[in-house]
Amino acid sequence: MSAGSTAVANDRAMAAKTIPGPILLLGAPGSGKGTQAKALVRLWEIPQISTGDLLRANVAQETPLGRIAKETMRRGELVSDALVEEMVAVRLRQPDTANGYILDGFPRTLGQASWLDARLAQRSGSLPVIAVSIKVDYNLLLRRITGRRSCPVCQTIYNIYTQPPQRSGFCDVEGARLVQRADDTETAFTERMRAYGALTAPVIEHYRATGRFAEVNGDQPVEVIATGIVAAVERLRASS
Picture 1: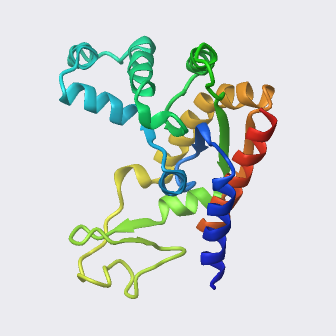
Picture 2: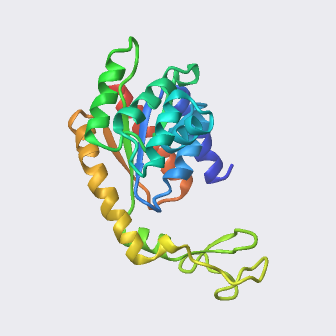
């Protein structure tokens, strides 16, 4: 059995022992949070709840909340915390959340974290939120983001530092010239990191203060990071 297969088998064995409950997965741009969230969804068979997805779904389905959000955005205004919280509250009443869920993009502020804690405390049998952060060195994140290039034809992703094409600047499959996204520049990345730090620092401290926070080293193979997250969830659940 390969090391990757062994890690997956171990994750499944550990996951079987744990009811995950609500998990806030944190990670800076380029940390691999999206990849890990999808792995946890498959592992525990729980949903991923993204506020962006919720907002788009409510608008598309023209729910009462979606109509309010659409009108707010039409005026060029930001959707209020109260409206986002109500969308989350509706989603959490659905039966697929019974054993847990991965939170993506919520809570983003200390106020939202406090609201969610209070909401869950009112529900009999609800587990509290635990937060797990995927920690990656700033310079490594910078290389991951600024080195990213993609083929405009087949959408293959390369990295000029870690996974370069055979011919510099051109796709191995299509031969097309590779492109860099506008927000993958160093200037854009620096601003995104500044915004991420400003938003998440109070949320992290909130969960750290309650003993419901853990960090996992994100500078490792994907399977090893996943194993670390599962172990962190198991440890936090045992003490919460």
